[in-house]
Image (cartoon, rainbow, N blue to C red; front, top):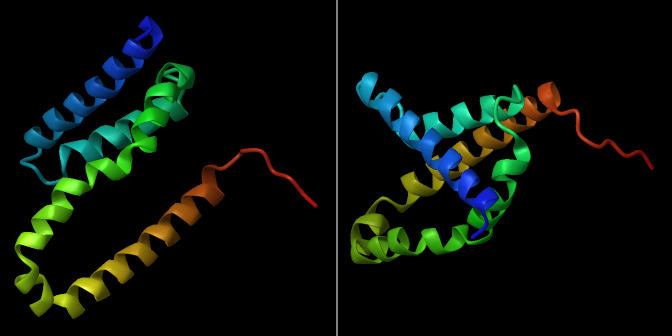
Length: 120
């Protein structure tokens, strides 16, 4: 591991820890990891944190993100009867929340997106 990569890991872990501390301070109203991601996002947008210092680590983590979902998936198999009894509620809430996320992310991208715009 290169020192630059270690710096990225330390930055990400520091924002995670900061998010957990803020979450604890506000009586766990929001999860610490979410608060940490928002703080990291704001820091990247305001250039307090250099994008290049965390880019490689973030790329690695998103590349292997599917592996992180295996333990919760196995846990669902242990309670499949309970999941089956509430399948309609689970499916509807998942669809509604996914649509809500898509709308919010789309609106945010419209507001702050200044990326490479190509026209055909």
